Image 1 (cartoon, rainbow, N blue to C red):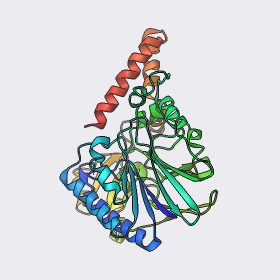
Image 2: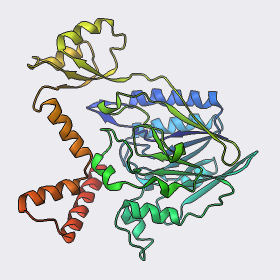
Image 3: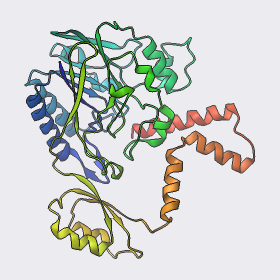
Image 4: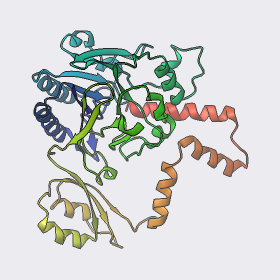
Length: 379
């Protein structure tokens, strides 16, 4: 059985004021072509279908057109909700859709939905584990001590019973501890949400979503395929690809990647302004999304206006020699990325008061941080 693993489509997303919808439509059409070429049997989409929990009519139509095109190829589809999705809205008509082999996770209710398909090697069981927060799990396990995301995910997975003689796949949308983030994810959320990879050890393949940078854990069987497109400057340093998984008998899995074409790339161009202008003569891809990093000592008058005459889709322009020295700026970024908001606040509190933050105050701050993050997700 051949499977394609996607995640983090973020349909309807804007990047620095530019709509990505045209690029998303193009990429999704390329994926449909690849599905047909590779003779894929099952498509997995591991969350963050949409950018917003209340997607626009345009975004809904884009996804509807994509799913319709996939079904014309007689491919089975399994979908879970991510933190950007509304699990209730995404699950609309899921019972009816399941009769057409389109399976969408329901809002978490203690039971993890199981879908089973068969091939010449036997059964493959798919478990649809939507994105959850501790509060979602607490209400179903009041007797358990659930203080954070790690506790919540552990409890859920401990209560998923599987037949280890069969092949078992789980779709999940969580942050794995030590995963490498990009700027298009909420860094502070990732640090607060971190979950050990070994919680998922009992599954044969773990189709993850949430992290936009392609990466894998557990000797490759736990995998983030990466987002559909590049959604930030930090993602310009690596190429996107599509993950395919070929299941044979138990224990025999081949994981490989295929490239597709994109309408526009997202790139970082670094150098002095005049040099960039001069070198642009030989650039055949001037419609790409550009993050401009200038090494000039002085500000360029009307710099953005001038560069957009050459690169019309320039997203950002910054000077690396301004505000901070390079070393200071890099150090500041690393400090922020390596600590969660609670740790940063604890240091601030200790510096200001000379005292350590009490456990009660830590709990209050943790609740406040999670509330802020939750509100931001819904905006």
